[in-house]
Image (cartoon, rainbow, N blue to C red; front, side, top):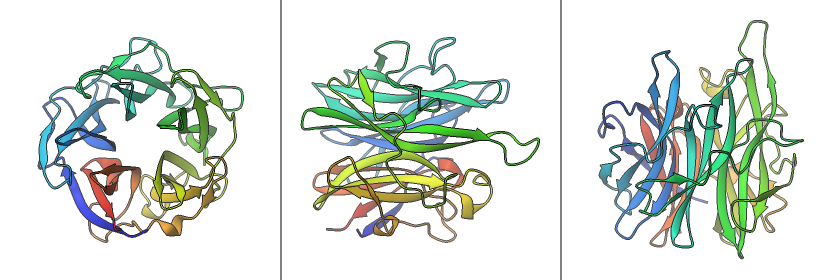
Length: 318
């Protein structure tokens, strides 16, 4: 695959969000409308205690991603109620059309004491082209199970031959690198299916993508698309520790392919998107999302500092 990088197509410094919405434009995910592309992302605001709270917003862009048309003036869905799985924010949200409405699969965050966070995947529905979303219920549609005990997140959903498929991540370990350090997490990519997009059957605990960095590799945000004769998956991966400050251990984009949606062959070399020295994505490439619009295939992704400055894009060459 040859991708033509388009640069930082949404720069928060040039198109700031409304006051109080916070920084970051993490995990861009596209919904193609009649006259534009609506790209959802998560932003972060600071609470009085100094901790972050993630909200879902969007930016409207021309279909070739050449111009920003406008940004959301408020979050599309509020944080969850007291004690719920998404009380402390939503990041990310995957959107798709189904039965005349827009499904939004959210990742809800809730804080813990012994570790920093727990997550689950929820479902909300929009009937106004993504301007607002309403939860189907207060709980998640996919969460921890016997062999996936924590950190179920990053759901990406497609309907293929009438069956819902979800690729997502699940935690395998929390551990500390040294005495006194905060626990860091490892997660892997899993797969589930559903007849209705609400009740899901997991391949509980099966890791479908091989590691490149060893057992402590953290894999995140899978996205599956078709190209040529294969199904392709992009995702991001990093080391368990040191990824926040050491670019050599930070997120980069990985790739795998499959002929049957069951067995996946890892082949990162196929995806030729890498950072540009001195640019916004020099140190990190993360949170990829692929979509097709008017015959062209685009890859959205975040760069340095986990998307603090916005997100960029690349276009697949024929």
